[in-house]
Length: 175
Image (tube, rainbow, N blue to C red):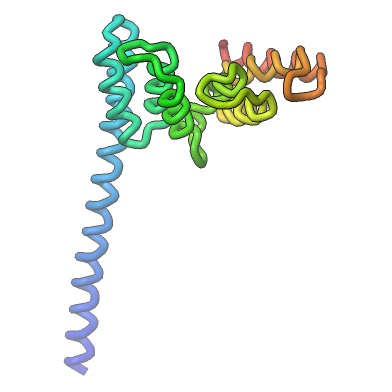
């Protein structure tokens, strides 16, 4: 009986130590995510002040930390050559990184690259798909571009009612 009690106590002790390790690992993960998001906020401030090199550096840190909008910001900087040499291929790379899986931050920018054929082969159908992902993820610009695609029948059948629906969504999101 004493052996069983000792065994149970040992299991409880080691189990709680393992749980503590799991909690500590989760805490570290959350702290890294908060830091990455803070880099994004600081990048946005630097961008608004016209300090593009600093914005690029901070968007990169944010993107590396898993913040989709940080990747999208970096994609934008490469698309327009702000703080870096203009490079459509790198722009597409970062927009894709910000649009992977459940992330939607870079989807609208990536859609625009497909619409214009910048760094990728022009593809209105792909642009529509990406604008939809952005719009469904709460990106007002994605909704506005999607409205445009329906208004002019680019990559979709021309449908004025659908265009108005997406323009309305964009307005509701304060585009």
